[in-house]
Amino acid sequence: MARVHEVDGVKSCREEAAAIREGALLCPDDAIRVRANKGADRLESLAASEERKRKANEGGVLVLAEDATNQTVSRERSRQAVRRGRDVYLPLRREGAVLLPNILLRSALFSANNNAGEELVNEPIASLGQKNELTFTGPRLGCYDRRVLAACLQYYGAGVPLCPEGGEGQWIKVTFWELARSIRCSYGTTVHIAIRNSLKRLHKAQLRARFDGWGIPQLRLLEVAFDDGEDGLENSTRSPKGSDVVAFRIGASMAKLFGLNVWTAVNLSVAHDYSGLASWLANFYSTHAKPYTLTLSYLYELCGVVCSLPEFKRRLKNALTRLQKDDVPDGCRVGCFELDNESLTVTLVRWGSK
Image (cartoon, rainbow, N blue to C red; front, side, top):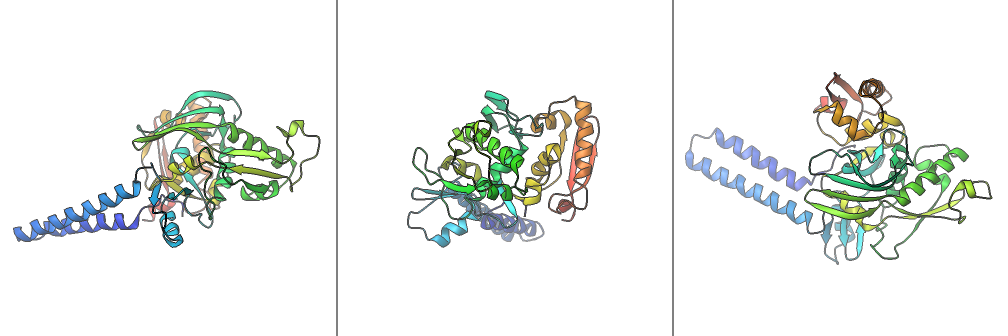
């Protein structure tokens, strides 16, 4: 479940082309071998053409005809965000999972340091990959904010279009009790206040993002409005209740982070049941399909912790050991890890089973 989704047709064409080339190597007839390789070339060309078409000209959003059927919209939304006319849709929600962009999960945006709230202005955010750039303005965010944002995004995984940029898009209204349930917490005053403060931070957050050769000059994670008219619970004259309503909406720019092969369906338990560094690592490795080595200094920047490198190594070992326990879902349970003074290599159980 917790894997980046691919376009099956593109993948099949490339796999068939590779199989044809492999078979051609064994053929003693030069003429047949040449024809086989030309056929493989055509398949690879078709795959590349399809991929270019799907990327269209709106970043990660696939543009469909205005008269595209609902069935077509649903089929394409299984792979990426789509636009039909003025309506922009996120990918379809998955049972038992939340959908999140890789560029956010593979960065220090939702810090593992639990120091949310510090005000930042045009702050560069460490992100995996040399071509990825994130710049952030607003209160520093933490793992709890990622959970709340994921819960809000899930409401757009059914049939609700994102809010048009600069337009008066539809507000989604939910109770605090419902949001607490969405992040797998038991409702109470402390949880109510934590959710509210997180929504306020997400409301103020603004990103500039550049990846895959294009960028988003300004991205608001969400807009929020509370039903009591107060700026914060500390100023409220009434006690918080689970039936209190919050309204939020997410702009169409968010869809560009949900293009082909750049988002992950993260297991609900992985998304919500851990905290701190274990939470960040579980989400980070959910976006990958195989093990590879990262230096500790680079990983230190990516997860946003604030401590000495020796202390970071100790925390890493504890967090990864926690993620090896039997209660961790198979999709993200750590099978083994190699940790020394310079680098870390993690292998998930699901990778070892391939």
